[in-house]
Image 1: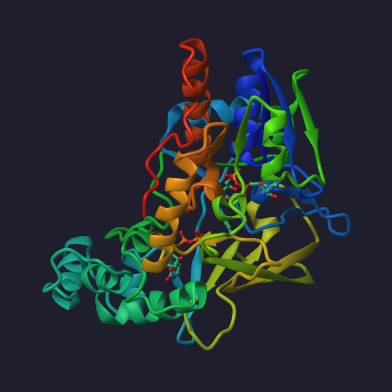
Image 2: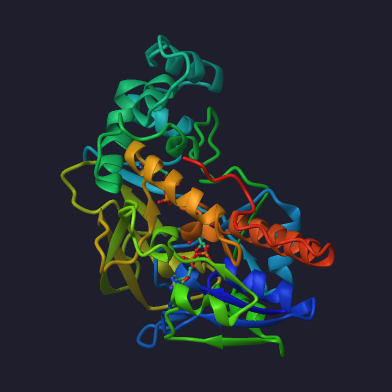
Length: 382
Ligand code: FAD
Ligand code: UDP
């Protein structure tokens, strides 16, 4: 069949590879002047440092099939993300672990003592935390919440943590030992030459043609047997129900000599520091040496029409609007909505890859059975 895939990020590239391997003809359309979507990385001409253009990306997953899949396409280097945070004039270890607790409260607690101590300061009246704030108050209590999460979250999301879902904080572990690995996942690493070569390899197939600088419009769908769309779901419908809320990011670059901050990521918990974090990209490739360094201060703000949508917000009114778009999507017969933007979800790379693999398998099964290709492969209701 003759398929269009809109978007050359991980979702589009995995789908393209899997459907091309099965013998289908694929045209990939990408509005940017490069492939790899938000995972795009490139070596900086001036310093030689590998830069993650749309923010730092660390590969971490529990999904062995996905880990094996990406390792077929590039060499991964061992990398453990260890994040620090500056708060109230001091530097602490993240995610909250025994070191953070002992440092913050100036104590020398053992794991069991720390657990009992945190329980004693946490808000135990909260049974089922609904909001981000309730989740934080229940798990770490007011002091740690205010030092590490409140200001950062207000800067990151632009709303009070009482309005945000608890699920956002559930991404971060709280540990009662000295393990400061930011992630809990079994597999973690960094592609030796960045993410772009993985996507390049995925798109390298004789059945795939990639068109850069080409924005795909819904009217073009009739030229293809089916369209797999990984752009924003509301954009497909010309925003006729309104715009779904996103946060966008501004990355402000600075070049320095030597080592700027001594780690890859330094978060800033205080609300009066205008940026959320500083990333120093050469530390994402500790196997390389560079005399100069490049840092990015990351500022979060509301996403307007002209900005790149980064984080779906999914507040209550967005969920209602999303549900209308979902009904519209379900009524489509020749287009499927996938990926972070197409399903309006906060997804890590491994999940987008797993979902794209699943979608290609379901597509091939539907074709084999003469059935129609689903417009949505999973439930994304608000
Ligand atoms: P995208 O990468 O957004 O690709 C969609 C593509 O579609 C884009 O290139 C866009 O230009 C194109 N497009 C849209 N509309 C059209 C159109 N009409 N015509 C043509 N092209 C179109 N994940 C991790 O696993 N680890 C991390 O450390 C991590 N860090 C992150 C940090 C930040 C700041 C952000 C924002 C995300 C991070 N992620 C991380 C998530 C990761 O970026 C996503 O999981 C991944 O990019 C999703 O891939 P995708 O293909 O679904 O979407
Ligand atoms: N967060 C915070 N303080 C921090 C780090 C994270 O309050 O120092 C909150 C914030 O709301 C953020 C969420 O936890 O959006 C998830 O953090 P993560 O580091 O996973 O964010 P990402 O890297 O996806 O931006």
